[in-house]
Image (cartoon, rainbow, N blue to C red; front, side, top):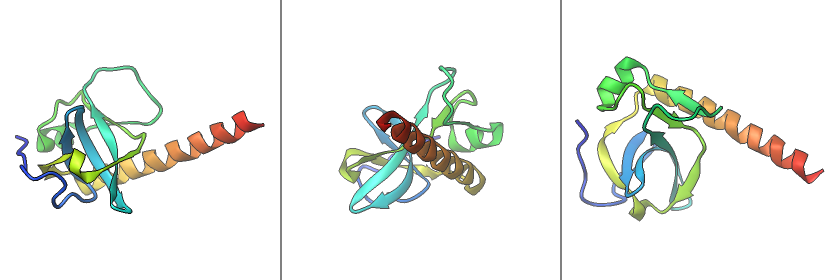
Length: 117
């Protein structure tokens, strides 16, 4: 079961699950006073190359539906716009998320360079 912290931005760090008015997110890192995060999407939904699906164990541990997934397309926001939940992503899942984020960033860079030519 997910639990909330009433103080936005407090103790938000890597691997934490946070909430905002738009849904749930996983924090990738803090950067220059902001947070880099990726969304947890409700499944089933359209497939994207940057999706990381949860194992039954991860879904149960985090109190999520096994059909939910992490869309590893990162974006940056202010810490005051999110609220920390009690859960942190297990290390093996965080490693999979990191790999998917890195791969997605490489693909976006390649696509951007291709479109400039």
